[in-house]
Length: 209
Image 1 (tube, one colour):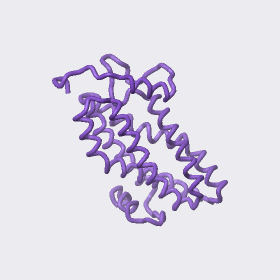
Image 2: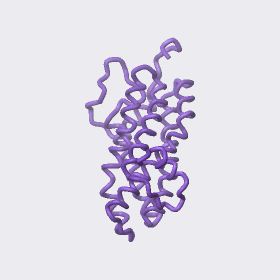
Image 3: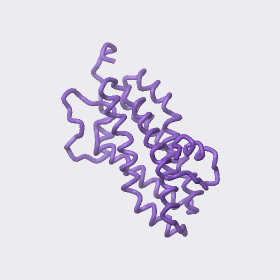
Image 4: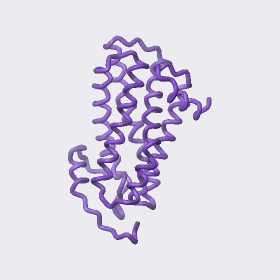
């Protein structure tokens, strides 16, 4: 079970017929999410790097787990007939594809994390990158599941919304104020959270970077 070979197969098998072990693909995906988290944490630096490295994989994996039942039902209703191993491969392959896209975008995220003070801009950048990863993941799922594009598209909308709420649930991710708890306790929708982010003003100097 070679993680790097499994991820490489994802890049080269365009027909969705991946033979790699699902566990290897999942481990590779989590590793990619973690590396992306490292780059994201450089926006604040210091302890925020470890915070983002832990929370970004948590956000993506938890969102996927919450949406697995709906993926199975949606694809089954559209005509897909999954064996357990095939379903696991499709899900872990999707995770691997999204992870590879995030990994590919990691240098860009790092650059903007270390060179801008605008949390609003950085959040928009992360949203664009995540949507890009979902687009490529959709292509893989359509081929692997043999399901209709509209069905997979509908499920990805659900996954995107869930990932926004999961990000809100485990906040803070990119910026943690002094003495702020590692996990917020106040209930909040992702609409409210995004509103807070867009109203956020950086209060630091270059010396604290």
